[in-house]
Image: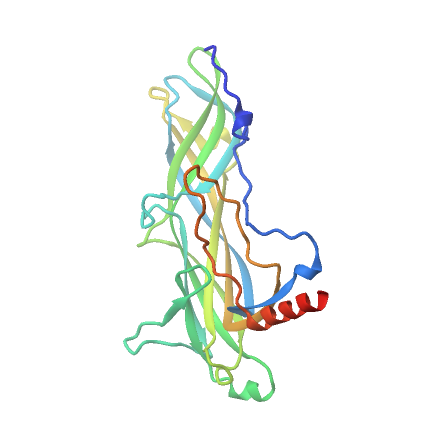
Length: 312
């Protein structure tokens, strides 16, 4: 319309759909600036990773939009599947979730006296860890960990979004490209898709520590899909009057779960100091408060003063 915009002013181009993160950490490679810092963290004592797969068949699933009277699909370009998530409601029943339920043999989950497991805060910032008690005395004498065995049931609930890129011919024999979309439930609270597996984990001493070990598990889920028999003629039906598309699909739910035994520890790590981000400068304020305190390690402070005096 005779208007132009200089995208270089923003440092962006129209094709920039993705971005890069800025951690604030930088290091010039000089080892003199590296120092040791103590941090209070959680150490992974033992971990196990599992890949599980569940299948769900879908018959006569309605897709939108309708293609119109007399339409025919002649070619499938691509079929995609992604998990449904509603950011406006994390409790939406359609959100695809993998919910693990675990029972442990050879150990106990610590409870609060009312039958509720004690949950503590994990690295994810939520109460995602259970405290574990195991009689580790025999293996403590050998300087080894004590094995516990578990059974895991994973309930898959929610929906997936399937998109089909197709070429169809309308009633005027004109070829058109369309993306057909459907939100398909794969499991409900009453009838979830259930996956089961078994595992073994190693637990450190519960006596030679100020903190009992913790058990945590987390899962991620993705999906893949295709036509049930890989045939357009057999798996896709179009109503000749309305153009409503129905399809038969095979949906694979791909789940990765990891289980960990973690213990609180204090570690010494090498550090180049606190990261400092470059802030946007305001035209009004001349200075701003800092977000994190300065280092006040007395021994390092004294040693630095001594180094300065020696150089003088």
